[in-house]
Length: 159
Image 1 (cartoon, helix red, strand yellow):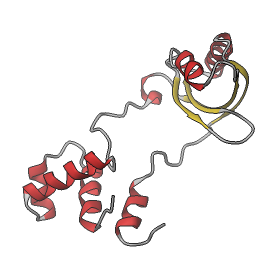
Image 2: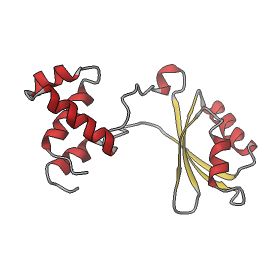
Image 3: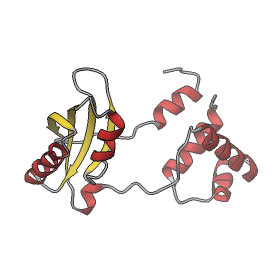
Image 4: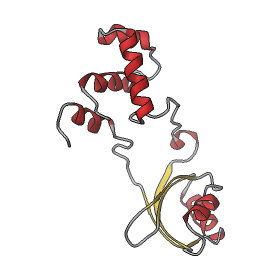
């Protein structure tokens, strides 16, 4: 889908003010409410913007340790079976199939370093993971950073 500068302004507004109404957006952006709504609907239908749900931060409810883990899986089981088994571990907050020397990349939230070890052991205990290699995040500078890319595309800078 092609996005333009007005689409980017609307997404920026709701990124900065996620609890605002469409009416408030139309007033602040000085465009018709129907225009805001139709553009939001069009971007949602095209998948440009996802759901409007809260994004809980694990660090703020007791899980301050974040690690990324490369996983080598039992290929005989297939990715779907492995992912289904790993999905039973709530501390696994992202899993991606990747290229390179490993099969999957996981992001893990843990209460402490010993708790991280418990999560790693739980992954191995599923018998779907053959080997893992993890790195602990020391500092997060930004994450989920897609708005600057959308704005660059909307401005004609095809990034």
